Image 1 (tube, rainbow, N blue to C red):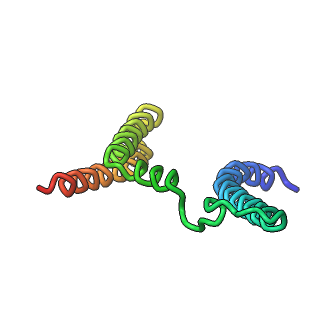
Image 2: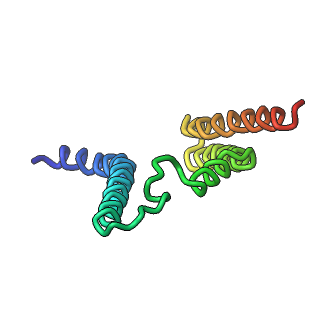
Length: 135
């Protein structure tokens, strides 16, 4: 293996690992969910085998009250405003960083991606706030 191909392979390892992290997280999430369902079904079988009444919480298929509360908290307009502020700050920070690190380069334009996302979220927040107040 030549040093050129090793150098190229070395540069690809970090991006490949970076892309694998979310994939592993998604697989782990669904594996944990399947494990929880399996345990729930085992519990139902044990109650049935012992002749005991099965608690209604074990039989519920839909989301629980806590899940609904967490979903509504995630969708609050203040959460959207927080995400918008973080993205706008990140975009401006990246623009400043790349301007200082590599002056005269186009790299500062990378900051437009999170900046645009943040501005879009800010517009979404404004629309959601208007709809809530009925304006």
